[in-house]
Structures are given as C-alpha cells and as structure tokens.
Image 1 (cartoon, rainbow, N blue to C red):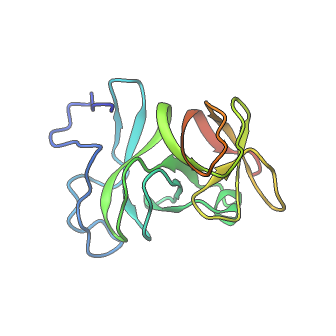
Image 2 (cartoon, one colour):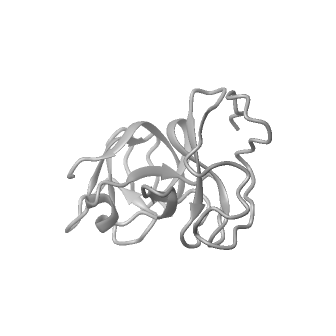
Image 3 (tube, rainbow, N blue to C red):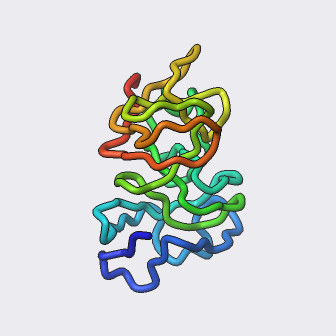
Length: 163
C-alpha cells in the first residue's frame, strides 16, 4: 500500500470518515485536496455520492462527489478514479486517480495490456466495447483475468476518450 508524501497531517488512504450530507460536512480535509504517494500514485479527497464498493471505478464531479462510473457520467467529461476502499453513501476519503499497482473491478475474460471501457454494470470496466461504452484513455489491465473481480491496473492519465 502506498503512503502519503504530501506532509498533510492525518492523511490515510485506508479509511473513511462518516459524512452527513453531500457538502463535505465532517471532512478532515477540503474536498478536492490532492496528495502524492510513495509509489508515485496520485489521490484526491472526495465524498461518496452513493455507496461505492472497494475497487470500483468512479466518476468524480466538480464538487468532488464520487459515484460508480457509468457510460453517461463519462460522456459528461468527469474525472476518473479508483476506490481502493469501500465507501458508504456520504463517506469522505481518498480515491486514487493515477498510478500503478492499483486495483479495479473488471468483468469476466478481460485481457492484459488492452484499453478498458465503461460497461452496463456501474463501477466495472472491461476490454470489450459494448453499445454506448466509453473508452478510458490511459487505463489498462495488467494481467489477463478469467473471472469478474478485482485486478491490477495501470492508470497513467485516465480520461474519457469521447468527450
């Protein structure tokens, strides 16, 4: 696991804080605060706009509200992130936006070293392009997987390819 290098006291990538509303109340840091880690990964402090399962790919809006990624959210040009821990609705915590040795939820039979696309299942990615899926530039699966679940990805500069 990566450790923060920013010097921001109290930064922990492995826990969340319970929030009460979607305006950042009870947050330890200002929403949108960014932090570099020892492994070169980049993280942003967000609030969950809904329940987020560990390793889901999320879309982050201009208010730093994160929700499981969908086709529609990516065509709106939102930022991409990867939740390395689970969030309850309104929880506050750190989401990885760039790096290696991070995990994402992928669908069955996903190949290695190929582009990844949004899928009908919110929060999941796959190497198959389906109707209205959106390619995420700068994101590849590291290893071939044969069952749905968490897999190591490389996210060099994740962005929607169809804005």
